[in-house]
Image 1: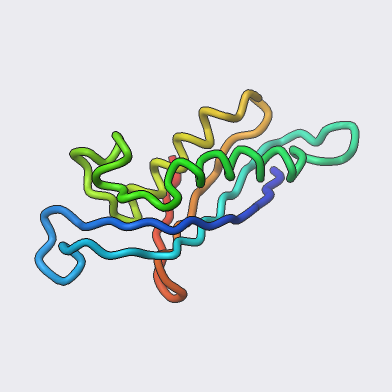
Image 2: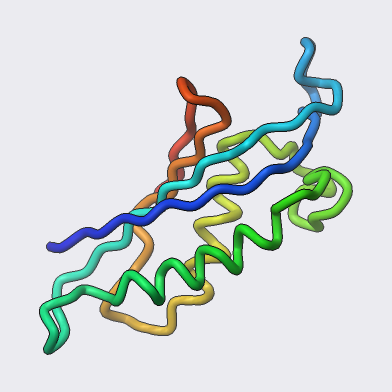
Length: 123
């Protein structure tokens, strides 16, 4: 089994639904996102998948989230609280939908909302 990882970032605002505390109010983060892909087979160049392809797809997903109010601007979060956990799931799904190969899959998405806290989503 081979695994590779890339990371990117986005800035956005959100507020947590059904939460009693300061994060129930509108606030923002500079999110860092790390994704790990896995597969069993390397191509003829000895790569699982070109890092450039993964970075392109991840950038497309980051552009969906960047400089938005996640609760109001992203349909996925209209009724679902945009916690770090749910943001990781959103990115996992969006990135998986962009990968058009059976040989490589998204293994996990890690979303950092600060330098010392993060959430991970895996299927």
